[in-house]
Image 1: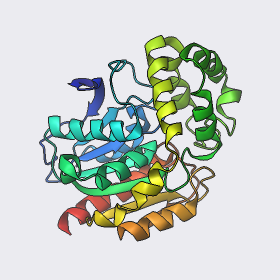
Image 2 (image 1 turned 90 degrees about the horizontal axis):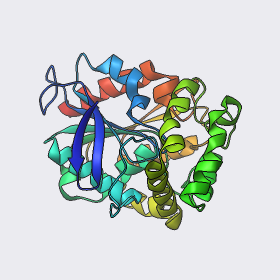
Image 3 (image 1 turned 30 degrees about the vertical axis):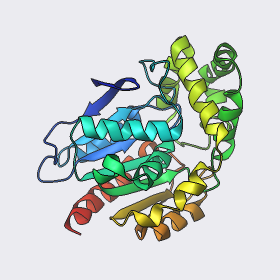
Image 4 (image 1 turned 45 degrees about the vertical axis):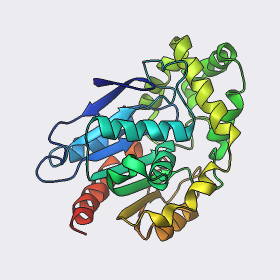
Length: 290
């Protein structure tokens, strides 16, 4: 993991290396994860793509990060979207294929709808089974997390101690409807929030901000038609948290193609990494030529 100091604090990220325009002539692929996850969400996808692309995956301050953010950091979703824009700027990444899954997809929508330097650095986007429209916070998992975020950081930590148990992690209110095969990853993602009081404080701040504006992505959707660059939507056919109809609506708004993935829940990078990597790789090359 490499580290970079941004305005909000220290961010860790994976970087397979290459130039600002990628290896082998391919564009840079930047991959964004969701709440209570880190950049390892993308390990399987990166393993498939790294031979031909520069893959960059930051660990965002969503609860599985290891470095606490500054006390005055804006940890609302729009604030973290601006942090992603700052990240792209500091690494001087251009013509980026920006990929988001789960809450990472919400960040993509906020970033491309906000204009400015961050959006200017994005050449094309991929939304993979993500928060959208009125499904925010999404499903039982998102609603349970936001409700738990109303607790004090200390009590939130007590509540989250239940996640040490696999049986609890596999419940629909936890990760049970998010991934079919990724329990080892979800157990690993829980460690920072279970062991670090500063990380718990960050996480509660994120969750309270998310709960404060539940129409955030409804408003963001109004600007998606303005993006005007290549877009791909990849959605799990069996998704029980992110409605498949939202995938179709996003593809229509963005004027993009929809790819539906079988035998997967929301976290397609864990459940079907090869299928997702193939879709992203083919699209990144085609999108660059468009």
